[in-house]
Length: 231
Image (tube, rainbow, N blue to C red):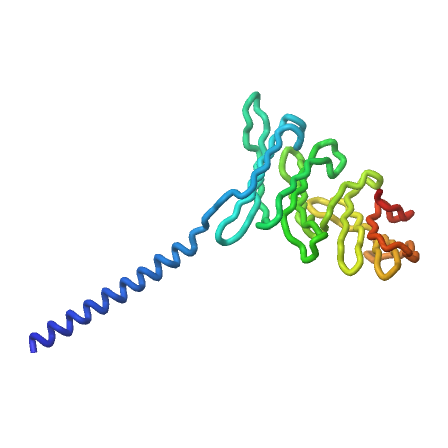
């Protein structure tokens, strides 16, 4: 009886140890899978144009992990001969496309801002971008800029315009309000027609023009009233 009891306890101990080893292995495996391995796949820096010219520097890192891709921005301010960190920002990014950073004045305040590629659209012609303004010595993320592809500053109207490709195409005219873009007019080219509309104060769209389109070319417009194409 004593021998049987000892044998039983030995088998039980072996099974318990095996179970613990399996649990520890599973736990360790899960921990390994959850480790976010980071790697900087693209870097951009500007210390001469962004913000207050020669007084600011911006560094941009595109970082990929085993879970996601994001873009980290660091804004520096010159203190004597040293660069001192003044602000930072993190936005979601896209693994495939290059940043293609553009430093330019997008709100006509004589200070240079930043526009960079941050996403992939369903249609290849729609370049998804993020707009970051230099405002009060900080980085101001325009949070819905990703909804308006192919952004450009419109000097004629002192606004931004976006060119959206769908079944036809639409030029959207946009004003910056706080941290967002607000559409106030648009020109749509579709089904052999060009239609211009403006948003009224009551929130309804008013049609200004509807003209026949005899061209096969896609048109981007620089004005909605009167209709005027970008050259």
